[in-house]
Amino acid sequence: MKVLVVGSGGREHALCWAIAKSPKCKTLLAAPGNAGIAEIAECIDIAAEDVPALVKFAVAEKVDFVVVGPEAPLVDGLVDKLEAKGIKAFGPSAKAAQLEGSKTFMKDILAKYDIPTAEYETFDEPDAAKEYIIKQDSPVVVKADGLAAGKGVILCHNRNEAFAAIDHMMIERAFGAAGDEVLVEELMVGEEVSFFALVDGETAVPLASAQDHKAVHDGDTGPNTGGMGAYSPTPVVTKALHDQIMIEIINPTIKAMAAEGAPYKGVLFCGLMITETGPRVLEYNVRFGDPECQVLMARFDSDVLTALLACATGTLKKTKIKWKDETALVVVMAANGYPGKYAKGTPINGFANAAAIKGVTVFHAGTKADGDQVVANGGRVLGVTATGKTVKAAQTLAYKGVDAIEWPQGFCRRDIGWRALKR
Image 1: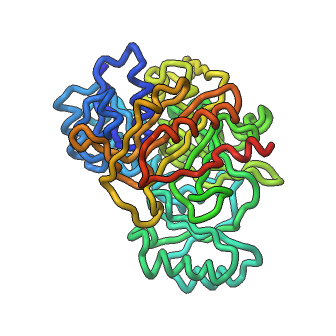
Image 2: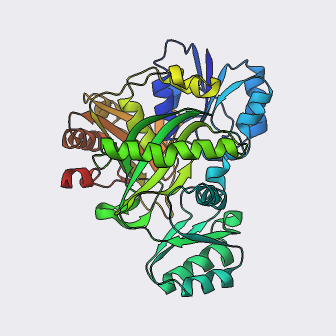
């Protein structure tokens, strides 16, 4: 098969790395890819958001299967347009992708079908949102309705913080049109986990659990980011909790989407808060998480391409997925200053030294080649991933890999996996 992976991050590098192992994959392309992906796939200079150019290229090159990594092209209908040309694609339709594209759409689905989540209201006018906040007794979360690159969520512990968040989104327009509407919802307390399932429109097959680390600094301090590290599996998701999530949340969501005329295909990424009263949905994403994808792919012990194809062809019931009986842990190396202002173009070395450590794989997230030199080209730049028999073993190896990388202009958290170790 000729396979095209759309995207340029650590998620897409991990997917390419896993897909390249499949005997079904004869040619692997990536658009636009990055310096790491270029080592295993042919990179095509087309932006992930350029839906018309991607469709034109896939048709011209007779691509058999397209794996869409990021959310923006999914919300913009890339899968619909590819399928209209007879090209199979992994990912939901534009209508189904509203589960991530509009937080209001997602919350309304959950409310309509009695799927557990936080109480909320939606507003398109700042004064009305502030009036609602005044009436709340407890802390709230303010969320931009649209896509905001994982940054449109602000936890507010008092009224002043909530008012500032409303102004930031709706008046200062920090997230552009994504903040035309905002959600104000109760701040749920508990432990956050990521839960993934592959879906073919009718059948949902659970993948492994993972736990992300959103805050930029050790001890979960500082502003939220797109993710500074993750590990899988997470001990908080016991067998009983796993089954409860499937029965009360994932399966009802799949049935709800079919009932709404938007059958869901692809990977469904559920951000959950494990509260005293059970699991409740924080958000849905319509693609693999980044960095969670790196640890999932590191533990995946089946043919990834076969599993992804099954989502597109409605054959998931016949697909068996096996996992390595190990923990995988990824440490994200980011550019100094992230998630604020940061410099691009700084040189990175030491990849061979990191790769020489058994059990360590370095996934590129925001890199590009400048001649023979790899340079930083984003905020989150590398995902140093390791597998081990325990969380501690995987953590130790991952940080050995981090220390082998030569990049003075980068930083990382030093406590990835701390919740599991604390247990």
